[in-house]
Image (tube, rainbow over all chains, first blue to last red; front, side):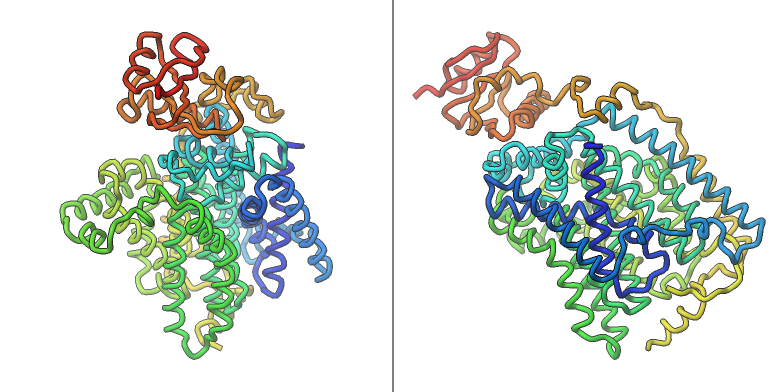
Length: 476
Length: 157
């Protein structure tokens, strides 16, 4: 029980918070959406609590973190009660409705059920693979051992000395990296009282299952349950998603936050309810608290907001758009700013690297061969079947087939975000301080992971429901 | 209200292929085929005793990164910064670089400096001959030899 307690508390906290934030929002299968995001949101929240506790009073930070975590959960619980929200109402009462949608005829229901069974089999197979891989390599890959988990140890082992993690002597461990993952790991260890080896593995599992669940929720709610089960099976079969989910790296968690923020922005666009913007901001802020790539993502999110603003300038109000989005972003981004300004100021590869604007311009535009090489690597890596299992090829085919309607009904938001994220990485590779072939070798596949769930979701949405269904009102 | 939203609310999500069942079915079959092609039997099944250890929180089944320098721990203070020297200078040989990284991981929250800049240091070499050579090279002397080729060293003034 001690092993699963931090996980349980994380879910409770995330669920309580999201219920409150989305209280006034009508959303199809809302409990499922909340449960899909509850774990990552809870971890992000506790990671922030831990960080500010350490900043406030390091010697007593473990006690403060624990007290604050319990306090926040109790507070959220009471607030939920006050608003008349019962936690247990969160769980879907009629999950069978999703298996047997009323509008399907009997043969189609049977096919949908078969796909559901296929998904269950693939989930069991994935869990078998996941625990096999992680139990034999419990300490994870290089980045996990020497960056993320090392920082978590600095938090956990001696709070009074936690700032040793920012020492310039340890520049190889990237003192400028954000601290969501180390904070979440240390929080679980503090909660269970020891450096529990299973905790980082459970965190890893939580994120990949959250991605799968979010895709299932979206497609089952807005396209068709059959699409959802097929997409869920496909997600769990993609080799690179499977492999990197076992390494304790931060890329799969980042992919979750990108996916959740993008979906929230899309929901805002479609249904014009500003709480979705607040939630999108929180997800984007948490992505910047997880990896530096999240800073880029915030920029892209605001870029998309500008486009939405241009399209809807008559209907949009500043107070109902930029303010909730910015408030959400600031929840975690304030910690990023604090850490970047006052703590992890050494070892930055880009920020604080001492290179001038002119240096960056020359790196970006002066070497055409380098640009060609990076572009070729993008094409080769995306089309490697052993890594992606055909995902990007299906994505491209669906994009071409969907034509003009591929960007209708807000789908352009997801497409633009995928394009901007990938374009950002394309540029960043130009200015990397490492030798380009080395940088591509160690990072390109992982960078592509960040947009893979979004691409999969969009592919299934473009191609529409697998089985013909009579039209019905698509309510929230 | 924006007309676009209105139309979305009153209908199902619009799809290019709504009227093309054959295309949709082909897509479904292609995805199924990809799933089949991606399928690989699990090469490394979970070991029951490893899983049991993980679940109960026991650690004896696992070899921790840097555990080979555990013998330093009893003689080290709880805080401080030390030079950490191995067989070759830092970043000249991957194997020794990783030895340093593993040691830092294990001895955290102490700070280990791979460069010979600190007054006190930890020396971890394969044999006494190498340890003597490294000390001479970097200007250190023994304070406490904990095992052959390894121990606490002090910078010569």
